[in-house]
Length: 290
Ligand code: FDP
Image (tube, rainbow, N blue to C red; front, side):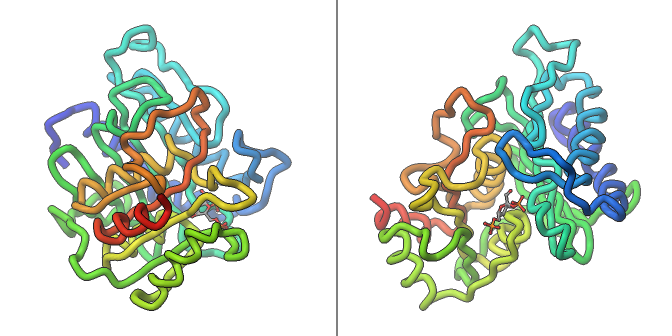
């Protein structure tokens, strides 16, 4: 894995080497602990363990000035460059979809490398990646130049696809949230999509987004009647996944505009509706919701 930016290369190599270890460490760490993450969600042992492992490794990379995680309240200043604006901020969702650990379904790890302190716009990302713990462990990496997929085994990463773009003809869709809790406008949109595409929803964003990148289509977790801000976090989930899909020729949206152009609030754990997929499907969604 050779990249033009040595810090990004270090971050990505660290994640790709840690992923098989994280996967092995899930065994025996499936139980809920008596704590909640900063978004008020139940944590399992593996959430905390994976966060500590990644915090330790990523914050010791020269050129990383901040480590932020969905599983911890505050940002870690990494010392060396902390007072300057020189270093990158690495934002991590250590185990995306960790409620799937109970039922032994797919999960992921998401990484965003921002060239700005958090909270930042998605436009400040210089790279983003996710690991998918499926039947095999893979990593999707988007840089300013290209999007590639790797297979990860212990100490090894093998590129299996390069210059990935979304297929032109969309096939799958997956929408989160209880249907009665959807807004009328979103329900109307979903009803049309249901007649055109095949439903695929696995309950871990990374698994669902990876299907969209593989087959074409749309993934969405909309704003709900009971929770207009939606469920997913802008800094840790929406922005990195939006960046990856846009680099692959698709679009991201919060229902009104690209996720990457959203001005964040002061809260690094801010939630947002998230939609990613083929351009034409996101354009139609925005027309329907406006
Ligand atoms: P989880 O709660 O298991 O961590 O990150 C939030 C997330 O999973 C996403 O990965 C996933 O897309 C979504 O929540 C699933 O929510 P629902 O259970 O409401 O479908």
